[in-house]
Image (tube, rainbow, N blue to C red; front, top):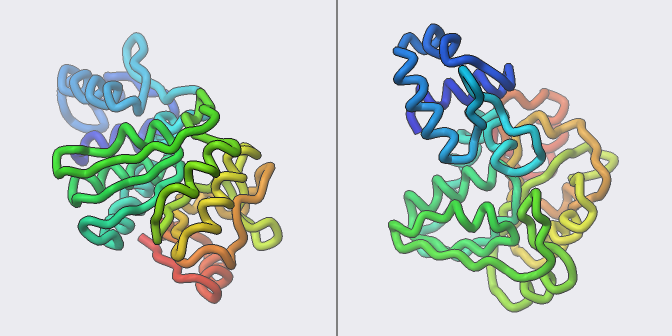
Length: 246
């Protein structure tokens, strides 16, 4: 993705709605060029075109959340790509940073991605011979996550050493938390099966508390987040896990 497209997503992340004229002035390009860029981003599912401009999706699906703090999430994703070995099999659960991670990873390396999220499964790039295993179970329409006891049974059928998880919040008191109880249950199950657990999330999630605990800090080996993380959390997390700031 070009720097100009990244800039459009950054503007939308801040404002949620913008016109073609405003973007043309900010980017110093023609309105026609902006319209072409918006078409590309719409095809990626990152925004919705409207009369005269574009806006972020008003929902909780991954396509909407990918566009929020996109620049930070892209840096997080690329840092995670460097940690994956060519030919490796990994489990990628869900989360907007993980969706970007899978897209970047499978464009660069031949890997097998096991996932419990259909949106993430579609982000696997087969051009390098990468492959995807989507586990079965109860399908949640908006988040496109697979949950429930059948999902757990399917996880038991596959082998993986490392898991990459998405979360919605973290505090020292609650650990890592998620908005959805059934998805949080699957996150916890994946974490219990992996030898090494990575959390990929932007720094805005730290200090937030959501409905259900996904896992404890003690269950996680590496956290990859952006450099906007507060000093208090840098100290707290850095004493217990490997903290990678980008």
